[in-house]
Image 1 (spheres, rainbow, N blue to C red):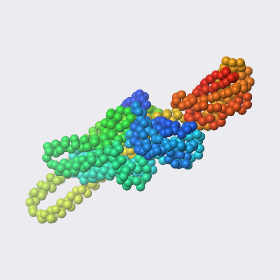
Image 2: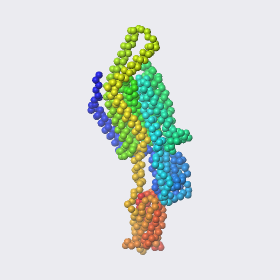
Image 3: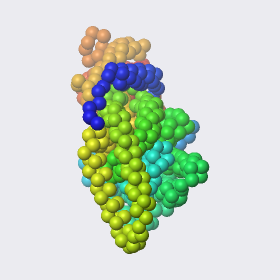
Image 4: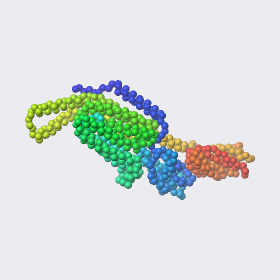
Length: 636
């Protein structure tokens, strides 16, 4: 038979273009209609604020978050400039009316200076979050406290935890996808030893990685020290958490999966009766689907899908997404194993897998589209955040896999014909040999017969391997499937990183909040002018007030009082106060010092935080004539 390379018409190109345009249109519509929401815990506010300068030490420090988090008694630490603990180490839940807020009380009699607030928690999607900021009492000062450079979940422990997550995903793909390939496409594969080893290795990898994550979970969310991995004292707290419960549930389901694998490669592989095997196939398909969906749900119930917008929809969608990935990629790995390590795959098997893979890709695209809208939410987040860029990389890898899969599909059609011809030849040869043995009618020594049988089997296996390796169609399919599998390995790695990355929605929300809270650096001293009239003789004039540098913290203030003709007006008394109505701070009274006629000044005027402050100036021009005027001033 003459082998020809697959030829591609215009149909696949048109289909791929149509699917791309449709997906892009739907994604654009979803992104355009998205509303702001967060699916990853982020610090949204604090009291005192980052960089604030307060006149006296607060009684407590409070933090506000975008979603529910888990905090312990040592999750918020307030440190004095000397590094000594300033808090009581008792974190209180202050949330009311849907607000997520936590606070820690401070000791009394704290000295002036710059204080450091360091916090660490576990968000509702199982990922550790942390941060630090400073505020000052009285005036900023030097501090011996160094802000942590490393975020929670980083370091060697974070790396090992990430590797364990990748191994868990890979094990699930091999376990669920390999079993699905056998039940849906290739029943004879249940008796093929390389396929059995592939699925069992998937089960072992997933079990080992789950146990590793249970041991790593404690230091991963707290100390970050590898030495704490064997500290079993932290294990009860891990088991009480949502992620710990999901990992334990996964281990229990893996026990059921072990029983499923034993039946699949035991009773099912040995069953000869067609009707009985059909009933057993149905039972295994139902049981395997339930176990696989349960294992997939351990991710959906404890990670991104469990929080944010529409969690009741997102969790089942996430389960479908994971199952589609497992069936497609796991079936691909099983097909690759069969092509390299076993006899020719039947035409029925390759045709069935082609259909199963197509359905899996459709489910994968639909569920992935919803997940993209939910976690990204806008075009700017798709291109301007780490999560969005990783998502684009994942979409590109899937597109490459679909393109290579189309090539594999064309090779498959030719391979199937050759495989059927080889199988028919082998059957005919076996029947011919059996007839010759019957015709000979000679008795053979059993030991000699067994030896001859082994030799014939070895020769036949070598012959089949030689023919298989020389088969152009089979070699082409092996290369294309190998390329698909290589891309799949990278795809799983990107997916693992994606599931532990802050979603684009939250990252953009945090950036917007920081931009809004960031003070704008003034061009120089800020000045305001306020006309006044006390009603008495020489009671009219103008107050000119300047603040330098007009930022939170210490400022230099100058006040000039001028008569209508621009000359200095020597008023007997001037009083000033600052009030931030938005935060109910103030009035903060300030009594300036008289420098010369019409000129008053005050140094180190403490402004606690940025905002639109109301400045009230009381001017007295005689013993009985005075007035109070006010105006807002922007302090960055």
